[in-house]
Image (cartoon, rainbow, N blue to C red; front, top):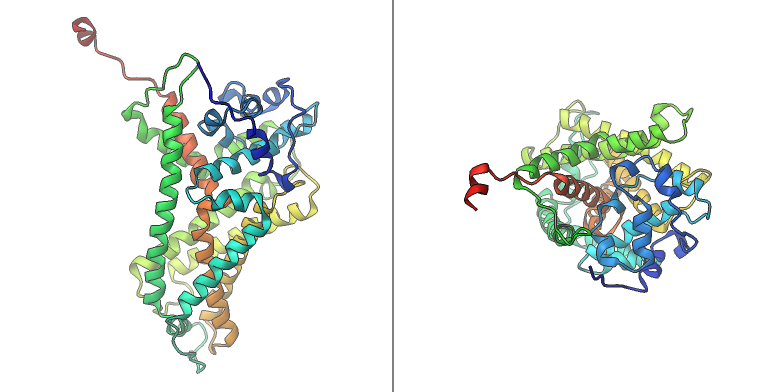
Length: 403
């Protein structure tokens, strides 16, 4: 079967690695990475086969291969590679490259390849949202909020920036994000479903297996089953559960989901800016989610600062950018929770509120362009993989005899 070859593919992927210095040219496909990888049993030749695709320039096949999304960066392959080719960092760079190719705007690729572009895009979005929010700015009410814990501070904040205006921007934002992600999602689906095996045949993708495949991928993402299995089968660790990689990653994800659920429920069912007590269920959920997320982010960032263990010893700017943006968004959100229940508003409170909204909007609008997109593409890739493995429905005996 003929393959389209891109001789510059490896150089393109290299630019998505830490500092643009990724080099897997030393790899001679010995198979050590496949032998030691705890997830290789799910896919023959993983991750060796993906590296080979990049080496020979098979971009179409690489972008349609779910294997680039399987890796959870345990680092076993990199630590034991006899040629020091760093397969783990290659897999991370390949995922970043795939996101940039799924993006219709071209911004994702420029942001992954250049820290300056990343910062510039962030500043431009931030300036745009600040001007947009302040274009409908109300007055600063510096009088008393009433008794402490009254929650009246929320109405003060939404007099400063009208809640209806924030609501309108939020709706428009989700439409833009949905359109951007839809292009990338359909791009991945098309590539995967068009992929042929060595015999030149496409998988059946039976309709009856669609929902079970989606359910399997979503539950796997939520409970970190593969991540936990990956860590349990690598070299044993003396670290307690609450400091293990899968748990730290889980607190970030679960915490963010809790905050998202709380914000969405408030958005749909609670009048904007209406005061509620601190023990209001959605406020408690958002608070617990924020603290859990901040816990995971603190450990993840500190490990990257120390840079003493795989996979934290080599970090790209995109790694740092996403972690710091998410941490700043969560931290300003928690500070806003405090401001709401203070008896006297302040300039600090209004500035914190505005900063939090801008950062939250930055985080969402840049989702398809940053590592945040992993949560969508990894889950989608695993769902498509499960669907492709589902057996085709068998023809009935009567249908076969009539044929």
